Length: 116
Image (cartoon, rainbow, N blue to C red; front, side, top):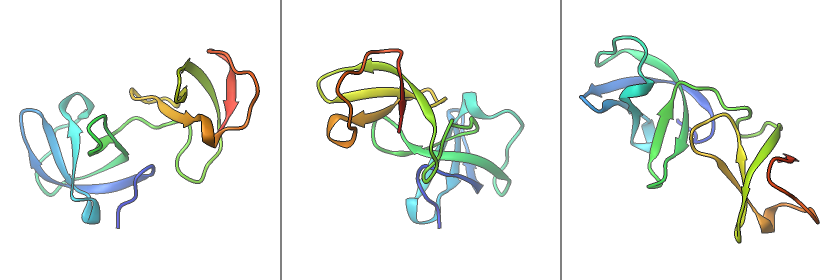
């Protein structure tokens, strides 16, 4: 079973010009972009990846390690605040959103640190 927000070892189903498609079990295919592939991969190989949802809400893999995973705590830097919440730098290309209804604070400015 594969879980979003965690690092896991997945098997390569197919390699294409765009990247690799990994067997995410109940998540279906998990895409690993070409720029994330450091070594030659072939179908059947295994690779340790962190699984998250991309901007299209599809399971995506990265070989980068976030500052925290599901069930862990970390102090994260606030990168941006807008009408829906604060975007936090967690070490990956896509920032993580802390919605206003999930965070208790009175004043928060960009570049501050938020425990989330």
